[in-house]
Length: 208
Image 1 (cartoon, rainbow, N blue to C red):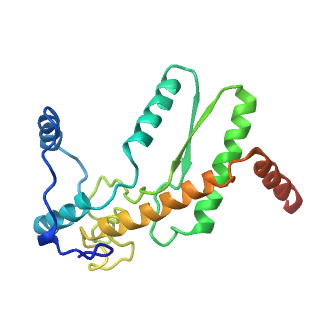
Image 2: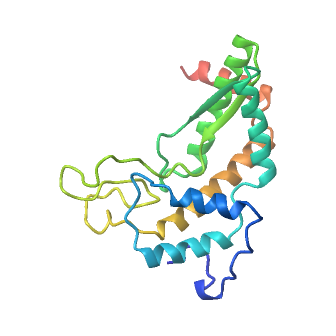
């Protein structure tokens, strides 16, 4: 069950109570009807939820607050939002070359838009967590459960692979954490410098 977290579920502490008002909001949210949900084994899903409640977050609150401010600028017409990445990530493709290539493409597009529109560009990558796929039908053409992304089941066309496995959420957490760490490292180590972007453009022209 615990793919990356080796603490038995039974010894994990309960989370502290939510602040006043948030508990009601939380209960209201989870009480609403949700469409296209996996058919988890309830007991296994609760065990996984307990683990995920106890591990470090992939992003921290200041990062979320900063993004909200930037998205407010987009909504007010002060900036342009550029979002790009894989339609659905897979555990297998969660590699340094693949992530680096996506970041490079996103940054190059942002430079073009910045100069072309003379507007700040907010770059948002579909990276580090895009492991689910919506499905309007539970079954595929072969009568097997539909592939709903690596966070839910496997793409192989077998009953065992297509079983909805809550433990995959822990694998998704581990892969998303690794991807996010790499994204932070790339963007804070000079990858986003204009000089590097010009260097990539020269390489592209030379190899075209």
